[in-house]
Length: 110
Figure 1 (spheres, rainbow, N blue to C red):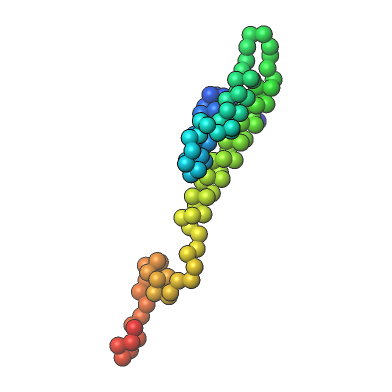
Figure 2: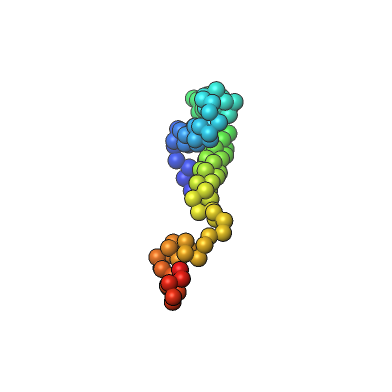
C-alpha cells in the first residue's frame, strides 16, 4: 500500500475541493453540513496519548480516497466541458480546426 502522506494535507485538500464544489452553489462552504462533518470526523479521530487509534488510519485512507474521487470528478467535468462536441460543424470549420483549407471550386463557386 502506498503511503498516505500527512492527514493535515488530506484535510486541506478535502476542504479545497469542498470550496470548489460549493462555489458553484453560491453559498459559503463553511456553512455546509459536509464541512462540519469533515472537521468533526478529523477531530474525533485525532491521536492522543491515551489510545492507539487504528481508526485514524482508516479515516485517513477513506478521506484520501474521497479526495481522489472529488478531484477526479472536478477534472472530468472540466475536460468534458472543454472537449465535448458542439454539434454538427460545417466542412470549412472542420478543415480550419485541423489547419487545412478546402480547395476552391472552378468558376468562382466557393
